[in-house]
Image (cartoon, rainbow, N blue to C red; front, side, top):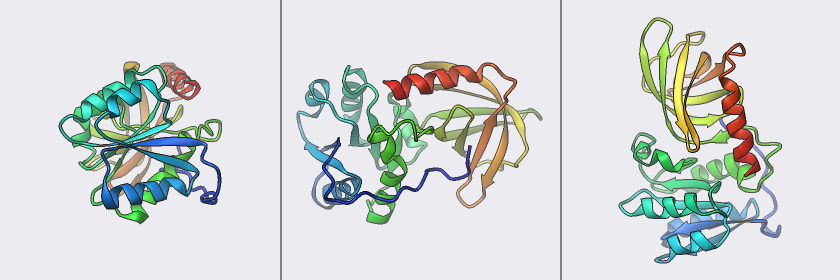
Length: 237
């Protein structure tokens, strides 16, 4: 996996006809404006949903959804993930940390907008994930998704991390623990429809500033093919 967490793509002209829709759930005022303007730069139309959001997500097709992490947000996420039309929706959360998002991990949150919403950071996150929203899937081989990772190293040390992106060859992760390039071991995790899986890996890069690091799956471990199958199914869905 490349060290970069997201491929930088130049934004399309704002005059481009929208080819995808993102549902903004109960977003008001400056937050709604900032999100709408940033998505618009990539040809993604924003649709404001309020009290009837869960019902509309069951009936209408959206390519993405932005929901604030708060009591009651589980209803919206559940509605999206159980809808035949939106089960593969790109799910953005607003607020909270990646650790706090773990309580919603079964819904497969793809990325988090940190509060307060600031245009540069919002635009950066939308840029990093917009190809997935627009279904330019052949060019986007990494899936942003937040889930808890257990990493048991060859020396017996156990590290808990949070996933950032997953590909068929490896993952980018975030952890408060001290990680060194070259360390090897076995990670385990679950992803939406993928039951918990274990696979051998090695640390391939690290960024000390952000406590982020990347691992490559062991090419000799056939269990990694289950991850590739899940990614293929996710993209085709």
